[in-house]
Image (tube, rainbow, N blue to C red; front, side, top):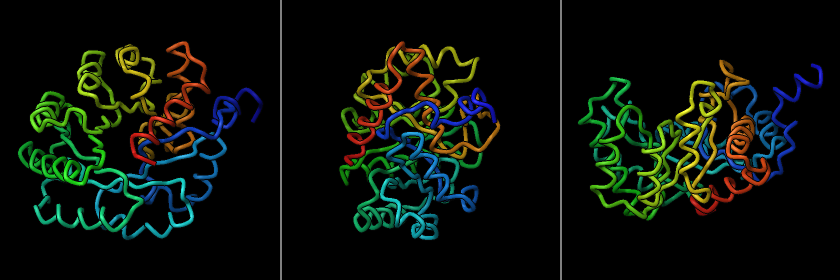
Length: 273
């Protein structure tokens, strides 16, 4: 690979310092079984010092937790995704509570929320699971990581109706316009940006960056999904958070290393690490 191609495809070539964070990834799935260690080493080489791994059920954590034992740079998030909400039972709240109280590497409840794009669970089922998990986050004084797709008004209505203003809420994989970003941040919540901000057609999302306070901006990959434009169609991984951060910094006219550092500090502060 010549120098130009290597710079385009290797995030380590950006030269970002080892202070960044991928606030949201799914490294416990089969897609990372064969090169798990190599994936984390590539992340480190790209400047990613901290990764939030999101487990979508307790069983996933139990099956794969041993592989994270020697990787202290990874912290844990646990929740029931809205597309899996049909199977939610109130007893799941107690099981999650026990896990959070027994394993200090869990730093937040999530991802939970509403997703009306997929039809695996009804809106009523999703709302029930979302309300239970949001209440658990408030009870345990833990951050809440929110998933929202095609359900912005109902998601906001639930959070605002529960008076979650001021509670640490992170709107994961934000894909909206400036108006939605302003309403989220007016409530004191945080916003995490993923690879789609680099897609040429996403002008509204890039414009939304201008209204997000820098002290509430995070970068994520949602690995293995949503790779940035230069790796689009490939498996995403935490190292590629560097590409997303560089694109955000360029759009805002900021120093890349400076934005990388700020976003990493935001993630550490939000998750109390």
